[in-house]
Image 1 (tube, rainbow, N blue to C red):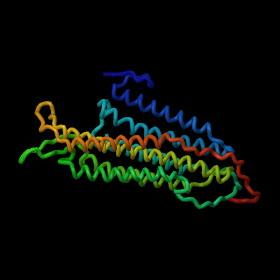
Image 2 (cartoon, rainbow, N blue to C red):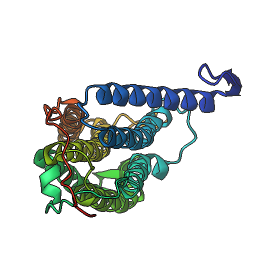
Image 3 (cartoon, rainbow, N blue to C red):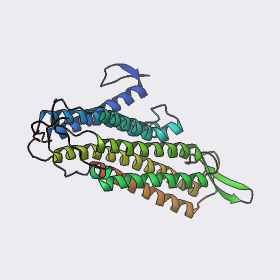
Image 4 (cartoon, rainbow, N blue to C red):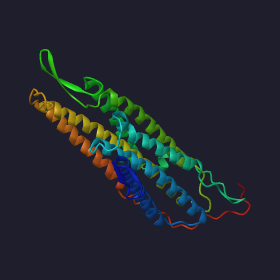
Length: 319
């Protein structure tokens, strides 16, 4: 079955057309938001404008990857339209995040260099804590720790690589699947560690890159905070949604296990209130984690660009 992609205008298989349209729509939204955000910036010099454009282009490319990584798994899980496997679905948002962080790293390493033959060399000692919002950074670490705890706990509770059971008789057990056992949690653990390390490396690059020429220290620090905020918010969003999805799947599985209604062909053992309540608690936790991660992403930064004049170069200062 073919479907005409309304953004590309080409006949494609329906799952591919839908995935392409969703990805392109997300990319357009990301690009529009970054353009609007850039228009609000107070830029004191041509070098500052180049730096803002460079940061916006880098963030746009990274944002497209993050959006695709977040949107594609629901198309598979709820609609079955994107041909992804179980482990691929679980780690895809984290893999997309690592790719986005790689884009940011390239952007920092290719930051516009000074063009003047003579310029003032500002040697300011900066640490990652100077440019990253403390709450957002700590929240990313909290989500990462939650993924580790939940992955290990679910792996130990699982009865198989992707199932969980409850004893209903002396020699009988009732099993349901899917459950986030070791088949899912081991790749998640590895991807989480890689994503957290990559995020810290990129934030360090933001803090240590060369200063923008022809601007004062306050404006340069504002731009660093802006870029670091985008990196930290994207990191905590993906980690938070990954944790929420992991906990939600565990909660749903425990509810199915506790309801004991069978699989449609065989009758289940009946109700287990303890398993149902445990599943309900996990679902509420997952909902809270997802809500907090999204709220932190969209919360206004309240960090306007300084309106100070461009930095003046002293005569005779040599790079």
